[in-house]
Length: 220
Image (cartoon, rainbow, N blue to C red):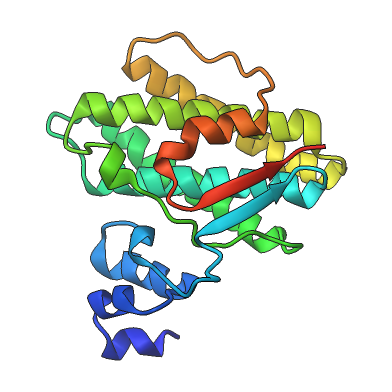
C-alpha cells in the first residue's frame, strides 16, 4: 500500500529527493505515461547516477541483462503512451505486446536476481534523443535498441551464464528480444538481425545516448 501517493500528487513524488521504485510504478499507474525515471534525483551517492556491471560473475551478467531490459521496457512504455500519427494496427499491436513482454522479463529478473543487483531505477534521456511523434525517429531508435538488447541477451546466454537454471530462464528472453528486433526491422523494410555474440562494452557504448545513468563494464 502506497500511503504517500494518496496525499501527494505524482508531481510531488517526482520532486522528492529520491524516488523509490514503488513510487515510480505508482506514478506510472497514475499518469499513464510510463515510468518517468528521469524525474528522479537523489543525493550524491544515488546509485541511479552510476552503476558497475562486473561480467566476471554470473550475477554481473544478469545485471547487464537487467539494465538492457529496463531500457527497452521504458522505451516501449513511452512509445505506447505517445504513438505517432499514422501508427498502423500492426505497429500498435506490436508496441502494446512489447510493453507486456519486456515488463514481464524485467520483473522476472528483478525477482530472481537478488545477488548484488544493480539499481532498479536506471535513468534515461529518451526525450533528448527520440521524437516519439515521428515514425522515422521512433522506429529508427527502436531498431537500435531492440537490436542491441537482442545481441546483449544472446551474448549473456552464450558466453556468460554458467548455471542451467539461469540459462533456462534467459534463453526465452533472448529469443523474444530477437523476435522484437525482427518485427521492428520488418516495419523498416530491413532484413533480420544476425545475433552474433557482441562485446557488452560495445553494446553499452551504442546505447549510451539513451542512458542518463552511466556505467562501468568490467570484463574477465
